[in-house]
Image (tube, rainbow, N blue to C red; front, side, top):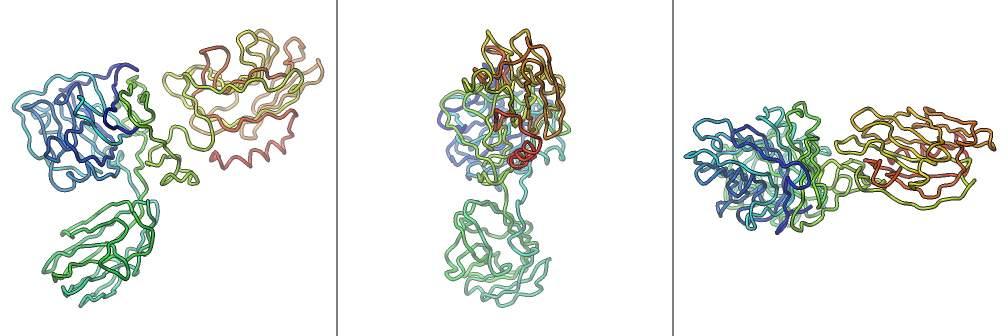
Length: 569
């Protein structure tokens, strides 16, 4: 969902109410993207505007604010902090809140990190103790303090995370090699009066101040519109003015390209990230035509970036300290993935976000992440996702008596083990209808969600007369192919074989004609079965296929190999 003029998420109503304590230490971690430069955008609150509220661009200051009350607060200011709140790019934010601080220093002692870098405090106040906190909410405090933008991967931890834990929550690495070869700076002169010492460590250069000066890498850089890049270099002034860096047309050098704009060099490390607006081969130059100067450049590099690649907070070593963890995964509810039950209820009328799989939304790149870079709960590979509580697919009648007495049923399945899921979730039920339920074929996860589970296949005549093939491997979070074959010999024998990724793991048979399935599929349901409101499956189901004959293992193998790459098996 996209937070807009009235969108928000209440951490009450849909689950257990989340109420934090203003005198306890916490770490808040989230990713945000916004282009709104207006005032008082509250990302989260603990009961009101000034009750544990965190704001972007507060009250015309252009600075973020931790607001505990009118006489206990902290601004952060200076440097990049005024830009990253509303530059339209994804940034990682992390706030360590020191609720246990003495002398009313809760806000003063709190620290704010943006993209892994600690920010400088601006104006602060510690005259009084923080006001008592109430229920937690994302996206707004009142009808006027509205956040406009996107939030994702919001996690709250008990205590203050250390430096390694903070770093683990911010990951935004290159997806390719540097655009410049081995980070070398060349000795091109356009018309720099002198360039020397070209190497992997750097060069010394002098600008004559009369024209644009190029000091690039391999004379050109290849960019693709829509992709994100990072410039990084080390700069040291020898004398004169500090030059400006730009990416320009190779012929009309006064025309800037790629949407980079310009960046004035500062002594030390210089970085800038931007999303490219033009595809082409362009030149990087240092220039300011009216000024002359000498400087040393080193460690120059431009790399292509992926979108944010945050880890799953539940996989970190400190996951036992997590209080709540939400992903932006719907415009009705946000499930609490920590397992603590703080499911959020979406309010207002926020816009949907259609997440696509792959780098920059390219479905052909099987990253398992959406076009924002965040982990997908259900990969976009043509499979159907089931939430474990309400969703299923009803196919209807497939065949009459005898149609499938000898048959093969193949399905790709990827179960998830989450709190609140239904026990014994059914992948498919071949005769879903309360009066004739359990008249196979039926495939389900056998066991409770809390316990380890296996796949169990049922086949039978009715609810009281059936047989099964079980104890087939059911790994969570992994795609698995389950192929079942049914062989019927008159009324003397009915048998089943179950193949898990081509390995025979389940068998069963009966010679009792009273237990034999008649070979019909009168009402096929996928993702739920048994009877109304029970045994919902949570996870993904893809490419369910039924043949009216028993396939030999050679054909089962051929089908498996033809589809396995689609599911990364």
